[in-house]
View 1 (cartoon, rainbow, N blue to C red):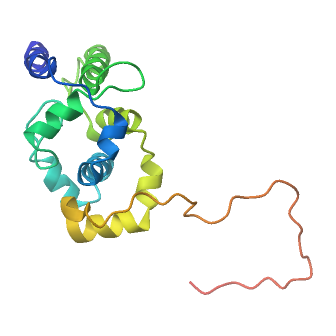
View 2: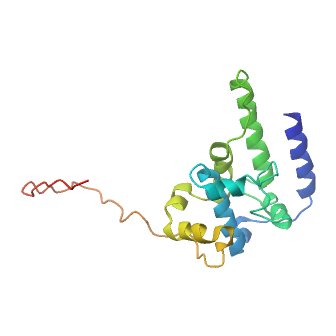
View 3: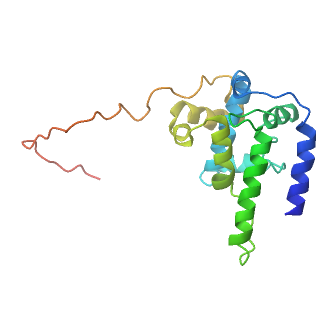
Amino acid sequence: MENITAQMEATTLQTEDSPKSTISDLKSNNSLWWRIHVFTYDLRHYRERPDSLERLETIVDISYLSTPYFNESEVTQLKSTLLSTGKTLEETIEQTLHERLNRRLKKRQESNDYRVCAAHDLAPIFEKAFGLDHKQLARDVEFLKLVDGNGLGGGEAWTGLATKSICGPKAQPGKKKRNNNRKKTRQPN
């Protein structure tokens, strides 16, 4: 635990004097915004996707903000991004992980399993910070095609997440009319 705190403090010193970015600043850089989406997607889907796992396994920074997703200057920019809470992303990561590790210390002393889970611990931090909906991301057909075909390099062709519902029109309130005269047939499996 002390080692983790020391690493986080060392990282904090590097970004304290950096200029603060906003989410709008990040969105204006299409390539960076693309890689942020791929990063958050990978955090949730590394168990089903070998390419996601491969990318995540190369991360060495305790905050998970590092290559292959981001270069050094982008990491500094991301960590110093001012969120709607008034805190920087770095402060939010540090505070949230510290809270989760403290809970784990209490719950898992017998098992000695204090690891941070990418899907349950990290992904929600970044999704909330960047205003991303992980379900929408996982259903966006164009996004998934670009990730499959280009990995982290798909940002130039990406136009953003679909703005309309991908699953069809929204259900209308009211009673659904039933047609009792319709023959029910079974579809073959």
